[in-house]
Image 1 (cartoon, rainbow, N blue to C red):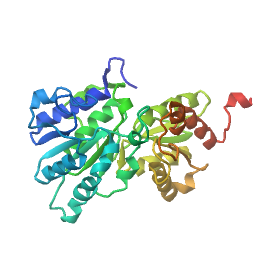
Image 2 (cartoon, helix red, strand yellow):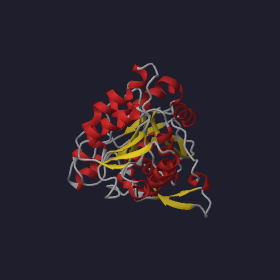
Image 3 (spheres, one colour):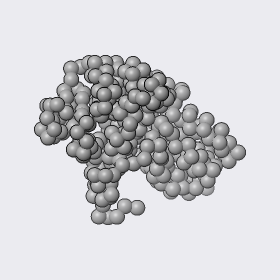
Image 4 (cartoon, rainbow, N blue to C red):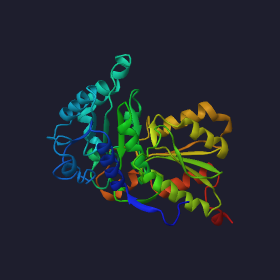
Length: 342
């Protein structure tokens, strides 16, 4: 329940305001990436920041992910707090050595003497009609690596609270945004709009309470899960929707507590199925709450193919709301809606 007076802001404005406030509060925070300055950001997330903070703190780079990511990690070694933008996370592959070997492992390898307070951010996963090389979800890739924190916001509150937490965090954070969410508006409270606001890293949020089946999701898929839960409620199935927010660390306690209540689980993600986030959640539940399960776990993921370019095939390659509804019905042993069987 939001109050009717709650203000609405877009995810874009939530991210922009978080960057602005953190740069204002801490002079060691700076932004670097392609088109972040003069162009105001490829997706206008960094709008107005060059004018406000100048070219020393908002740096336009050449198209050299390996170069500017390496410079960023080096700056973080020396105590600055860089925010590195990738125009899409597909391009982070050019810089994966710096993210994994230079950033993620340094704190451990130096026995805690080196901190790497850096944020890698940008859109991740499928947009629309941009083909296989611009549509991959990297949540499972980065969440595989000890030394990284991996965040995936859904709402404006998530975007603001998690980006602020990421910038303040002493360790490297991979911050996975979603291009299709940038323009979506969400209600936010005064607390969320306060400049001191931050969300805890590693804590999921129950977006909707339910008693019959648990649905876990992150990023854009949280919205799909909520829409599926609305449809299921009309069929007498009460779905609990968990917005993971943090992929690493994963809030295993929240997931297992929910499954122990509902006794059923549907995992939802946009990325490839094999070795995915859903697989990890499934294992956690099997390890900790196996005896509570009343039905097999249902995993919904993208198709196990490179993203097709054709719109009709693209739709088939990513989870749709109807897929979630069907999986929840199966988990509740209702292959068809009650109305169809009556």
